Length: 314
Image 1: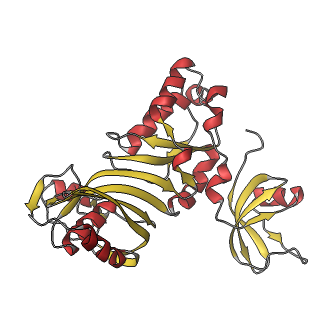
Image 2: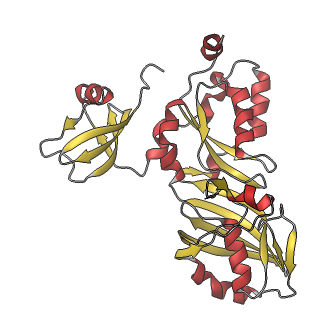
Image 3: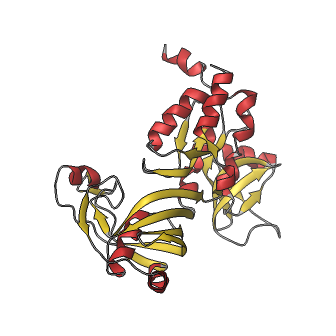
């Protein structure tokens, strides 16, 4: 029975950039996509909270082997902060825990932004997925336990004030690295400004190479699925699927012969000789005649396969 069900799934390799709507968890959005595409294998790169919308890269098939590279890429968020209120979750999902009558001016906001850029220390929100002695912090917080999380280094490459629509709100755009909590940025901005703050709106605009212009609304995909019920991917969905190697744009590329590609796919290393041999060491994206072969690593003049791709028979 299980074999018959697997045989009815579609063999899809590549990326789809979903515009996740507000109100769904990332896993709920993924479940709805499975009903449209019926893929053999699928996963997402970078969880978004239910109250957040925007860029959720979806990896199909062989692309799941590159998820870590997408998640390690820079991310861009646009978010709105409500001044004067702190909440238990640092967003609108939690109850208000404290209030302040102080409202920061535009000039005072601009003055503190440099303190929140570069490599800084950040204490994650108590309602987060970080594990504390084997349990998720948000589970402990919901049970009423006092959660103490350690500060961690994060990289905020850019933090811009976009607008102040009124005295109670400010809109920001942040470009940051892995592990940054925007809710914690809002909380800490409020405290630095002598008031309180929490996120009321959050939208992710970019994850690594996947940008806002690549995003497809879930509603659009579901409408197309109704046009071709049971067809799964089909020709109608094909334009939305980006190549597997899209997530590897920031990794040096190395072309090899078909013969060397066959060795790599068998888990064997390839010696790199001659003037065309790369002078660097570290991870590389290996191709043969334009086809993705493997994620490899160059060590002492030898190319070693780390993750092998099988796309030719798809």
